[in-house]
Amino acid sequence: MILLLPVLIPLASGLLIGLLPFRSRRNRSLFVGAATLLNSALIFWLAVRGQGLTLHALRLTENLTIVFRVDGLTRVFGALIAFLWPLATLYAFEYMEHETRENIFFAYYIMSYGITAGIALSGNLFTLYAFYELLTLVTLPLVLHKMDATSIHAGRAYLYYSISGAALAFIGMIFVLTYGTNPTTEFVYGGMLDTARIGANRDLLLAVFLMSFVGFGVKAAVFPLHRWLPTVSVAPTPVTALLHAVAVVKAGAFAIIRIIYYTFGTEFLRGTWAQTAAMGLAMFTIVFSSAMAVREQHLKRRLAYSTVSNLSYVVFGATLMTPAGLAGGLTHMLFHGVMKITLFFCAGAVLVQTEREYVQDMRGFGRVMPFTFGVFTVASMALVGVPPLMGFISKWSLATAAAAAGSIEARIGIGALIISAVLTAVYLFTVVVTALFMPLNESAAELSGRRLDPGWRMKLPLAVLTGTIVVLGVCSVPLVRFLNAVSNGLY
Image 1 (tube, rainbow, N blue to C red):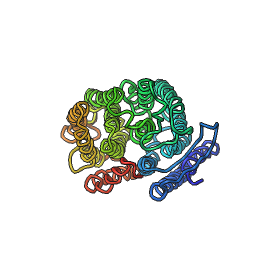
Image 2 (image 1 turned 120 degrees about the vertical axis):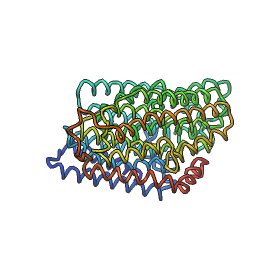
Image 3 (image 1 turned 180 degrees about the vertical axis):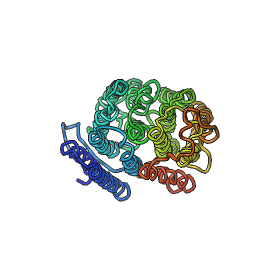
Image 4 (image 1 turned 60 degrees about the vertical axis):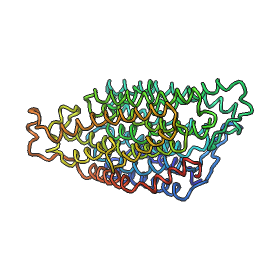
């Protein structure tokens, strides 16, 4: 029963906010904060002590069951969301004071936590698929929150892309039910296909894998189904931060890892045309989206294209189909989540405090928002891969895993990583130089001499995240060892 609580607590809390709207902002914040912290504490407990716990929660048919389980991959993704969600919630308390319909926002915001926890705890492919679909439905109102023409357009794009991806993933699930070794599609490290039944259908199953890869890859923003991600940047920053750093995009990468290592299996996929195609899509997305980020002048959309690129770092590691590749992908999945949510929080602070959204409008803002742009600089250096910050660790892990893989595709991938690192330096350090070393625009002259950094509820998450970026860069060895063990199926 304890495996149900991380899903039920946020869902029940969201329903209570919707049914019994809080008249006092303070009381609502206390309620949301307490529920979020309780859920995170429970997920951390499961990550530390819950290895191997399994719950068959609901049997719809003989083959379709809702199963929750704690394994190594659950512990990795669960720890990420449990760490970042309370920080994002605290940030949202201050940010949303500048928005409307706060009760509705926080109702869906906390319910999204429960659905994301359901993805992390999924013990079989059907459960993963069901919560993957639910995540679209519960995050759609957050994208639509402002209810203006731009938000409605973004919501439609998000819905159309997500539904298309889910349809492709559904086809994959049907074939796994047909050719799997167990009727409930429970995840097994190494895959669940019954090789004795494949026979002449090998190429068909490889095509089905690629369909599933693209389907689940929609939320990971793999090219060519990536365009929804920059579009939804119109949503409030607490939403885009979660979409781009924690919930939706990481759920897509998490699902791809489940498909490769726990469903089809690397022994079936390695060395095939399907692996080459999947890796090729990831490598192209890495370079293409980095180049798009350089061109983009709207700060949040620039960061969104950066997310598209960095999610494919994770996917590239997974498509190497080696334990080292998976470990590198998991390392970047964790570290990118921390780095990118920090950058989005900084962009949100600038938007709330100054109403500026474009890079060229932030000239000299380092003088009026020194804390915010100090944090932005550290997070930018980390995402570029400057040692000893965490971004260097994850990129080094991916590059060495690709070198060890030895294939031509993997070596091309190293080149893609290097090109992307250079472009990342261009699109992030351009912001840093503009803010720290250029004079204020004439249009912003009235800001001269003022201090416009946000309040403590937005500053504290930024401070914690900055400390994490440094500490996990310098002291990454225990975590990397654990991720290597997970990647070798030891958890």
